[in-house]
Length: 341
Image (cartoon, rainbow, N blue to C red; front, side, top):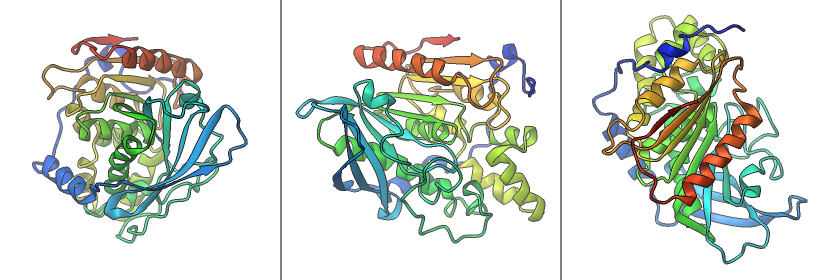
C-alpha cells in the first residue's frame, strides 16, 4: 500500500480541531471514581511458564464495575525484595493476554511487567484471553469497537479504558514495584489505551505508544475501511442514521483528547503507510500531547515511511527500550522538548 495520508511535512503540523464533549472530564471522573478500590488486586498466584530467567504470576484485579480482570505479572528471576520500575502493557485489538511466555521484552529488560487481558476480546489473534465482558449486551455490532456504540455509557471502550487505569493501580499494589516509576505501553489498540491512561493518570512516569487506534477517529473513518474503523463503517452502513449517536460515543474515547491532558514523557512510533491506524491520527495526538499541562512533557516520535501497521517493529522496540531506560534513569526529565525522528 503506497502512502495515502498527509505528506510528512503536513503530518508534523497536523493539529485538527476537536469536537470534544463538554462533559468529557466529568464523564471520566465519574466512571473512574466508581471503579476505584482500596485493594485493587484480588489474587496473584505463581504460574509455571516453563522459563527459568523470569518469574510469572497469574493476577486478577478489579476493573470496571469491580469485574475481575486477568493479567500476567512477570519480573526477572531472583529479584525478590527489589523495587523495580513497572511497565503496564495493553494488547492489540482482538487479542487477549495469551500465554505467559509470549511477552518477555519488558521483564528481560529488568522491569516488573503487567500484561492486561482485554475483556471480551482474545478470539481473533494470538493465544486467547481469559476475561469475559458481562456488560456487552447494549445495541451494537459484534466487534469490540461497535459494542454499545450508541451510548458512551454502554460503549466497550469505557469499560476497557477503565480496566486499564485499574491495571496501573494493580501493578502499583503488587510487591516489588516502585509505584512512582510505572509506564504504560501499547501498540495499535494497546497504543490508544495507553494514551488514554496517560490522560487519566496524572502521575504516570512514561507512556510508549505505537500505531495508536482511537486517534483522529472521524478522519480515520473517512480514510480507511481496514481494521476496527471498517467495523464502524460496516455498522453504520446497516444502521443508517446512527452516525450522530456513534460519533458522539466515539468522542468520549478520542485519543487526541486524552493526549491533550497527559503529563508523562511520551514516545511515539508510526508507519506512514498504515491503513489500519492512519498516521494522521498518531501525529494529531503527538502534536497536541500535553498541551494542557504546564510545563509540557517531553515527547518524541519516530516515523517509518515504508512501513504499514507493523511500523518500526523490532527496530522501534529497541528505540523504546533505550528511551525508557533513559527516562527511568533521569527522574528530573525536563519538560517541553520535542523530537521528530
